[in-house]
Amino acid sequence: MRTERASLIWRLPTLAFLGLLAGCSALPSAGPSVGEIVQDSRDASGGGFELVTISPGVNAILSRRKADSFVKSFGDQRPSLDPLIGVGDSLSITIWEAAAGGLFSSALVTDRFSTGSKSATIPDQVVGRDGSITVPYAGRIRVAGQNSAGVQASIEQALAGKAIQPQALVTVSRSVSNSVTVSGEVSNGARVPLSTKGDRLLDVIASAGGIRTPVSETFIQLTRGKATARVAMSRIVQDPAENVFMRPDDIVTIIRQPQTFVAFGATGRNAEIPFDAEAISLSQAMAKAGGLLDQRADPTGVFILRYEPYETARQIIENLPPAPDGGRTPIVYQLNARTADGLFVAQKFPIFVGDVLYVSNAPTSDLEKALQLMGQVVGPVSASAAVYRLSGK
Image (cartoon, rainbow, N blue to C red; front, side, top):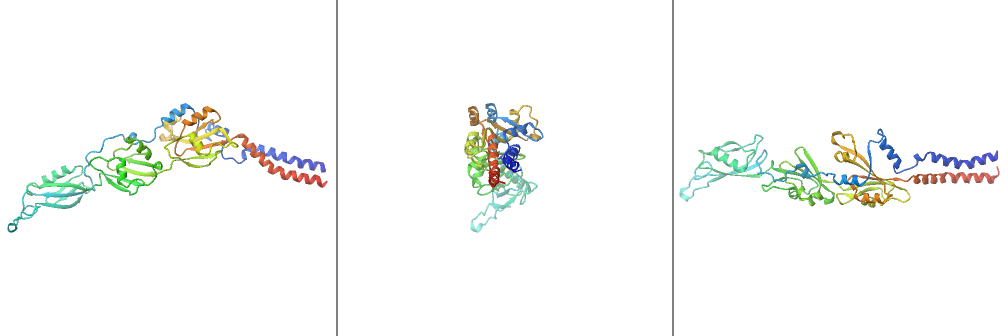
């Protein structure tokens, strides 16, 4: 009886170890293994993503990936036309007459040898919703859609025969219809009026006090009508073509969006990691993440998770199903960092904002965890068996 009990006690560590091996999938892990990711990509019901091996051909396609561009979205590089008066604008009007004693001039004062004032300034007139303003003795004058010279001619024509050879001078004291709205991360959000010279994007941002965030973390979003595009501030500074001319009613929003990617798994640093450039390579990203851990990492299991624009994704993947509404396609890029070829292609593979770098554990890492857990179980059991044996029971 004593022998059977001792034998059972000694078999417990072995049974515990076999149980751990059978339940390796339940061991703690930073994420899926290479095999699990490959299997998920083949399983349409569980994956929902495309698995792509990084190669020189893939790098060539990604190098042609078109980022948002103001030139591509809006195109026109010409300055805006001569600003036209619109609803909400304020006009300052001064009317002269050729002689004293008219509608807008003072009477002749003979005892003082003064001909009197020959002009009158009308208080600022705001263009109403009907596109008109009111001028004394001229009535309602239609001004919307005209420039200053056209309004002057309309006023003079309306006063002909009433005033003495009237001459009008019209200036826009406050422009609302010919302005750009600038908001977001600027020193002073404002509605910036456009000049007749033609104003570019950086001009109106400067008029609003300039940005208050680092250039490397700033994006400019331009909305014109129903079209919207977002471009990195660093790109606008580097490429003069992106510094487009503004149009009336444009909306410019300054957005702070730090350039970051996320690294986790068998890397030296699991964190959201910033980078200053508009894009960095996979090699640089791995270095910023602390490299691959020798004791844990599987060099064949370096993955980049990204939502790729459909136009780019369909060039990489043959027979790719259409994305809903031309949206983005989830792609998992795989790198084999065990070979020199893999290290070369990693130097050309671009990392973009929001990418996820994941490095899977090596298969031996799970075995090591199992052995460590076995040691935690075997130690107490072995000690109990030794005490039982020494007790002679």
